[in-house]
Amino acid sequence: MTEKHIDPNLKNEAHEDMDDELDSVITLEMEDGSEKDFVALETLEHEGISYIALSEVNSMDYDVLRFVEMDEVMELSIIEDDEEYDLITSLFKAKLEAMYLEGEEDEEFEDDDDDDEDEEDEVEK
Image 1: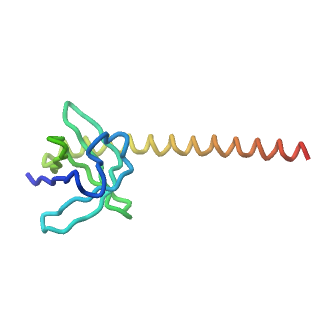
Image 2 (image 1 turned 180 degrees about the vertical axis):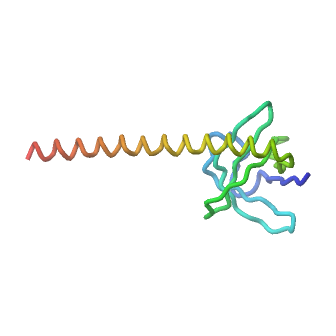
Image 3 (image 1 turned 90 degrees about the horizontal axis):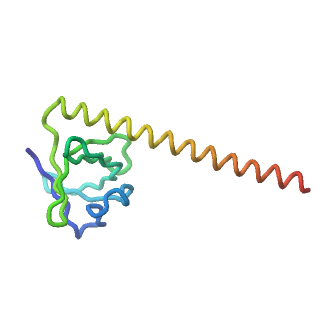
């Protein structure tokens, strides 16, 4: 199983308080020695195992990996079992879609507030 390690001294400390820093960019060292930047989209736990959805910076695609935090270093590993991967991917898809839809509702609510203020301004004139 391929494992990737995040050095805590890289660009940020996304391994700490992952839920608070999901929009952080983390740098991973690839097997060929090159480095790539990824955005941590979301994490979830299923049956006692932690997973993370990572998207390469400026990409619309994301990948799902297992992760374990050990001694302030996050160890990532690929999910080799197809059934497990399909299940976890579907859980992430549902979670990310729900977050996206929730964000749209918040924007609509904020836009409605702005419209109400504009109408009040027009009435006062």
